[in-house]
Length: 282
Image: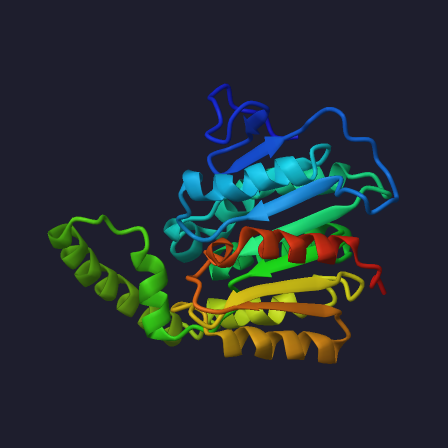
């Protein structure tokens, strides 16, 4: 496995920093089991530029729900999604690939991603895993929170603007630079004939060569999401079911993007537990 860093983890005791974006928690008490009582490994892929204090709400919930599970948190930022080289992107997910490679056949994996940013990293992991093993991701259950959407310009601006400072003047100039950057980025992609990244992620998540048809999934989303329209999520779920995937839908009302815990933490985690405990494995 990748050499752990001696620097501390922002997620607290027990977490090891594997590189600049990946943090690993091993309770040392997990016994591989074929039962679905608890996941052996939980893979968390937060939204782009997510703050640690927000991610920690999900980390702490999982530590409480499934105390014997290993947890791998893989963070994603603007640079990773836009200008990082393919080699750099693959290098940053290497610890995830190593954990999956070391997984025992009877160990069960729960994958939980957020927004198009997290889903983009999931797709990269799936492609690299398939390239190395000629197999789809060994994931038992998958949760897709606030994704996948479609790449409208306005939604893209809102997604990138989340990380801008609160100061009104700094935010104004940040928006100006953001429009210049995104405009140049999209024009360059079009001129070079590159496929829209979000469209690619939508296709990859419904590709049985990358994500097994035997992996039931849960979509958590809302009517109030200003970045990912609920109709885009439901459209993807229908396409998944047409392919043969088992899909569950949990639609909230006026909750914000990747903030559906506001609509009721009990409801949110009940949906996740319901997916995990379900018997709908193909």
